Length: 125
Image 1: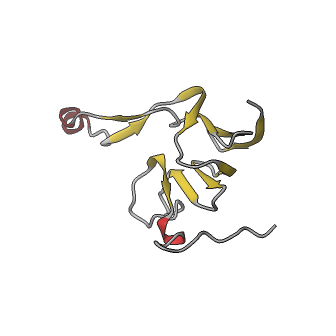
Image 2: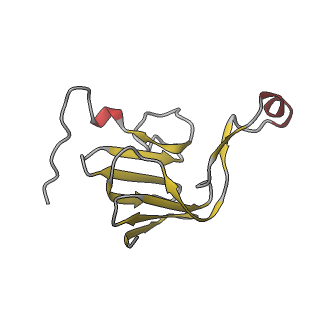
């Protein structure tokens, strides 16, 4: 499948395919893993972590994606319906889910921009 767009962050990258799928690779772009509670108690590790991903893998999103973006340690995707999904570091609330939210290893809809019952805004180019 042809790649139509690439976005590169500090230590990770995204690619958008012609089919509207997103591929990710690099630091913390691998599958999410849960760390057993006993290991947490002993090691002080976070509850969840993500593995490094040396080769591109599909990012699970419920809709076809039209645009991709990366920051240094976070990523965003806008679907064809105009919905914004973000993931990655949230040290300063940059994901749009509020401050105090831990890093997200899977895309999450930015609900503050898409209130229930409202149709997504059409994008003007």
